[in-house]
Length: 74
Image (cartoon, rainbow, N blue to C red; front, top):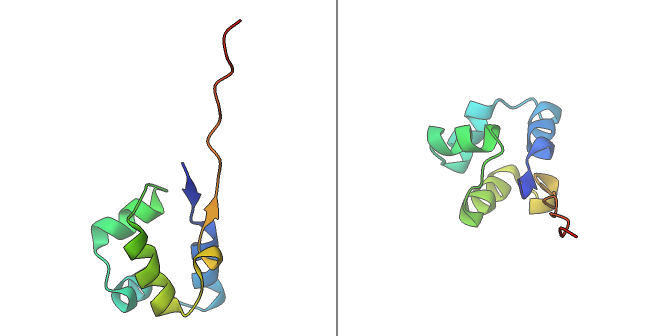
């Protein structure tokens, strides 16, 4: 996983907003919301829509998580 959306879920709690309310405000599909919930990749334009709806920055809703690197075999 390259991005973690835990910050988004915390922001919704802090603002007393449901996932459905955020989905409707950001005009994203239920499929996209499901992808976010599972930590799957979504298009950057989706993150921008969420940021516009939530009046925040991408760093407020997602964290970059480096993927584990494979060690070279000796």
